[in-house]
Image 1 (spheres, helix red, strand yellow):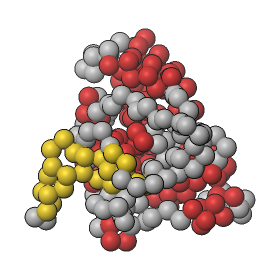
Image 2 (tube, one colour):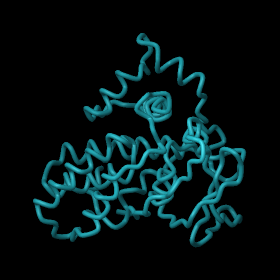
Image 3 (cartoon, rainbow, N blue to C red):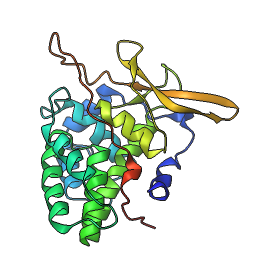
Image 4 (cartoon, rainbow, N blue to C red):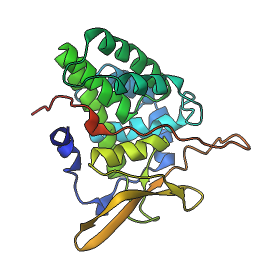
Length: 245
């Protein structure tokens, strides 16, 4: 699994991070004549279109925050069912019935969170184990497209350059994809949280203790008195989707 996710780390230096511009995204995703018209992008995404570019994924992911379906504070009971089912799998010898059930539940969970890296990774694994290479690769490509988008939105090393997410879980998923284990995040400003690493690591002589994530879009329509309860964590390297060359 670690070899599979190495490609996610081959990103250009984030001095020119693609910070999402909400006004630009709204205008382009609502324009039917735009190449980033949201309805068209989502149709291509759901169809597993391999020609989707990183620009497409940028408008697709952050454009979701402008859609009526985006309800990040609602519970996703199918996600809990999915993780419980996955926890009982033998990744080396999974049974077909459980894999098929996993895919059914994953599709239900994806209706509430269509860009969840953990859901897409589990689906890639299940399809691969069932021998459906086309769907396995489609899920793998979707997962990588979303993770690249999050990682390209900022370096996450300060409050001024956070990575932008649409769901809290996407932050820990992105870190897991980089092989980094994290602990519970803490709010440091109105729109930014700091997610500490279990073990700091050194880059260019500097010790990194965690990453900053912008969660502002999640709370735009926050109900009064709402308290967020985090889902259980899930590590990417528990399962082993195929590697594509």
